[in-house]
Length: 360
Image 1 (spheres, helix red, strand yellow):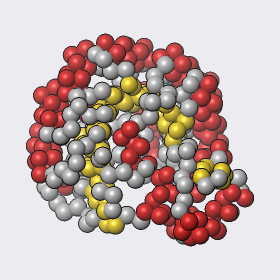
Image 2 (cartoon, one colour):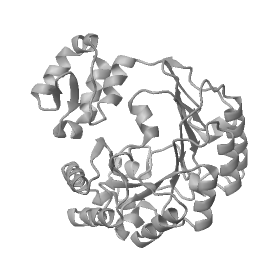
Image 3 (tube, rainbow, N blue to C red):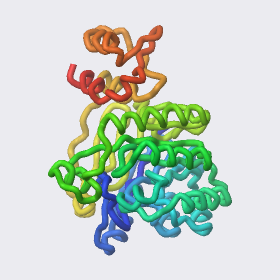
């Protein structure tokens, strides 16, 4: 059964590290955007009932209760097996949480990134560790126990001690799901542009080294496993039964429909995406045409992200024989029976591994 992704790219402020197609836009764009979303969802031809819904952004938790109800009411299949909303931590009220549950939301992903205040401030966020703890209590009071907490390894000024402080808070709060992302530097974020230019704004001069970031990540893998939150995907960790059903659709090449600016869709054979920018989406400018999925390459590119690995077909063993052998010899891949998976070292160098399968 398919999943549904709804893009809500509006934010109160743009975080320094963010490289998503989101930001602060003119206020009069929001009602126009919501109208466009409802038209797009209403025009969609539903082949089957969706089982997961994911509201990402941006900050969809800023949606009014009425707007959220209208959006979710337009999507068939309620109650869904999983319906997630991304939220900025520090401002969740009991009324908001009750509005989410009444609209069908049963999972919340909190963009915490760090529990250490100097690191938080440099990102542009305004929460504190204590406010995150209060958010979890509010969500639990509304019946939402399925919560993810995002962390970023490599924030400006981060040290081994401060990283362990954030992990101490994870141990204290005991969420069922944690995402750990290693900081990416590219020109699509303010921090990335500043680093590429050799500047110091946004704390660009205090970014940990690549080796330190990799070390932070490996510490998180070990500590989360000890807490009963094992890694099931490169950046995602969950207690058994709390894996993100929606995101698993991406990694297992299952169909999903995307709505809103820069949203992607996949029907099992074809891929297509909406215009990237909000203005282009509102003006209904043409999106890139649908393209046929390269399923053999994609099975390795997304499937190897999962710790369970992939089970290649005979034709794939033959087609990718050379890179498979090379990466096994280099200790980046391991073969167990008919299953191929990344090693611990391979996870840290996964982009190099994936690129080889996309170009072979």
